[in-house]
Length: 160
Length: 201
Image (tube, rainbow over all chains, first blue to last red; front, side):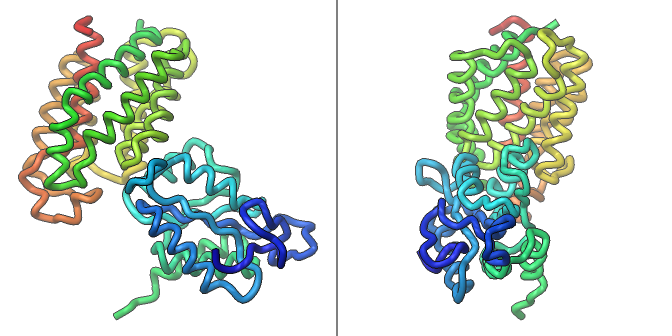
């Protein structure tokens, strides 16, 4: 685990936090939560670490990885996604970033049926760059709209 | 009129045919996919069969919604949300009536296919399950057997198509010449429906 959860020093683990980076008094909802869905558990966990690491410097918004299938194979698990979403939900919305294929379709199917917590949103963004932008923005106290926009902007950064 | 048990038998028959054809589905998925379609669908429909045999909901719509939800949570590949959405949307359209007419079912399945198209963003001719489902549902007005035959024909017609969705699309022209595994399993689904409707199962 890299970085601290928003909620300040002492906040640890998935149940920690609750007070927003933007609202240290804890009077409003916490930061936007980020869920990273990849076909691979290793990819999801590593991208989460990378994004947390690059966002570090203050309290970091809650990030959860939902990678691979429940039995550890390559693929997508609806149950892991739902658990990750519940884990990072602080009441300010949840941005889900996905890699490809079944990761995209499973999140869409779950949203379609209102199975994810209220305020959950599939963000259209490149996975690694978008995740980093989303975690940095969320950790700075950005709204779900602003987090989604920051992640989506990663598409416009050309590398050549 | 069709009751909940008709739809349960459809799902059980699908599980049996997917089990029987799993190796062929995976074989079709090897040159253009990631060689898991047969095993993924078998895991999903085996779970559906177990869930429905343990506890069959009283309404046709609830049977299909339960089956769809089970597929989404057990398959692990793209076929999970796609078939899950097909059955769930169809089930929702059927509402909570204890029995449904063939005509109501036809309209509901048509809505289910529309939901699959929206979810995957595919169009006819993209070499996907829609290429079997769309002609299949269109022929449902004639008979269940006609729907199964049309879906089978639709699956065969995917051979010369170039894939525009999913992993196969990365292969470009090299996806041509292979039958689409998803269209093939969709034909199996409608084949199982015809077998149950014809009283063969």
